[in-house]
Amino acid sequence: MAILNVKDLTKNFGGLQAVSHVDIEVEKGELIGLIGPNGAGKTTIFNLLTGVYTPTSGKIELKNQETGDLIKINGLKPYITSSFGISRTFQNIRLFKELSVLDNLRIAMHKRCKYSLFSAIFRTKSYRENEELFYENAINILKFVGLDEKKDELADNLPYGEQRKLEIARAVATGASVVFLDEPAAGMNPSETEELSRLIRDLRDKYELTIILIEHDMKFVMNLCERIYVLDFGTIIAKGEPNEIKNDKRVIEAYLGEDV
Image (tube, rainbow, N blue to C red):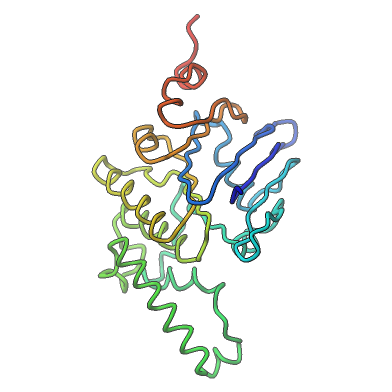
């Protein structure tokens, strides 16, 4: 059964149809790419799937981590979709820049805390046990992405590439099963991009994630993703494995234009 099932998804902004009758099916553990020219509707789809926008029509279903059933998440607020196991990064980095690297991850874990307000105020045993567990989990994730030695630094003081890593680490720290990455390699040089590609694949394997990403770096996408959906003018024009997509005439025309 698919972990994410999108059927006939449509979004209108007044008279503009930004996304039109999109179907996407993602199996657990897949690494999926969503590509297309600028303005094709990629980020709009991410915003629909993560609760930032409400679909005009169509259906979004996510597999419940506890029951295994598909649940409809159309139009649910982001904090609710997060509780069902969805997290994301953004095209423009949105860290808590005045907090430490460690605290960025601990905040992401907050929705999983099991202690009450009373326990937090009086520092009860339940509070202390939960906070110790969050600390250990956060340190483990930071070690995995190579940021553990910078755990006490302000997020704003990290180099650009490390801020990108931290944002991905924060998305993982929520305990999500499905992670959306919006242009994770944007602004990175070739060596940073190659390192990021390995990191994303390793995170997927270690934390048993399903990852869907938007990216304009075609080499990055083709080397990393197992299946790719191509979007143009709000519709899916092709889907398949990287080699199929590379040679698809409709994809080439969408990116390069058509001979006159």
